Amino acid sequence: MSACIDLYDVRCTLAGRTVLDIERLVVGEGERVAIVGHNGAGKSTLLRVLSGFTRPTAGQVSVLGLRLDASLPPARLRALRCEAGQVLQGLHLVPRLSALENVLIGSLGRVTGWRSWVRRYPAHEVERARAALATVGMLDQASMRTDGLSGGERQKVAIARMLVQAPRLILADEPTAALDPAAAQVICRVLGMAVAGKTLVSVVHNTTLLPLLAERVIGLRKGRIAFDLPQSQVDTRQLAALYGGPSVPVRDRVDEHFKRRQHTCLHPDASAGRSPCH
Image (cartoon, rainbow, N blue to C red; front, side, top):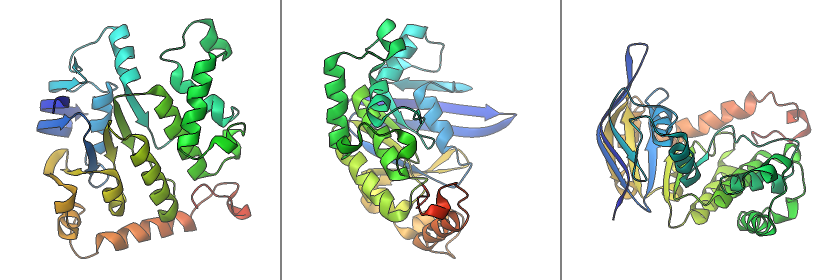
């Protein structure tokens, strides 16, 4: 198996504080890896390094054969970001555009010039986008504005947009952060099926979702790798220790997290029962 990601002696510092310190990390092509750890452990920083948005203070970073610890020419960086798709917490959908138009944004690495400015996409790209929406079960909502969709539906649109991009590497930063446990399970199954055969690196807070997203789990603590194990070998005791002590079971902490989210949702639609948090 060839390496998709290769990090050696990578360190990132911010305001004199080390936020990431990884001696060695190799992810093979086609692997599904979850990154877990408490807030501030360096998970999101690691994803930014892998996407080329953050350059490490020291060390070597190779992603899809490109060295990211040195400055890349704009054309090479653009090529990398076409090959490395992202599913982010904020989704970054355009609210006034339809689900189909948002998914077509994933083709902009191939559609350039005047077509990209006036949103006149070639017929084969439109068909590709419709096929991606069908894959995530959203073809019937293709013409709906995304600001009229539920949280789970918007997440599916974001996944479809990533599929249209056709990346070799997918970086997912807490892809179910705004969803309740039932909706999160659905989204993880959709994401897992959609990225079959591709390399997937996910930041995961809800550890009950690990079997759906990963074959390998990396625990980060204070920017360093605390463990790197097959998903089947990661138990509750290890996770409890990673998150700061064994007194509260991991599943109970996850459930309490969603209870707090549901009780404090301030979204304007919450009173009508359409909160994106539910």
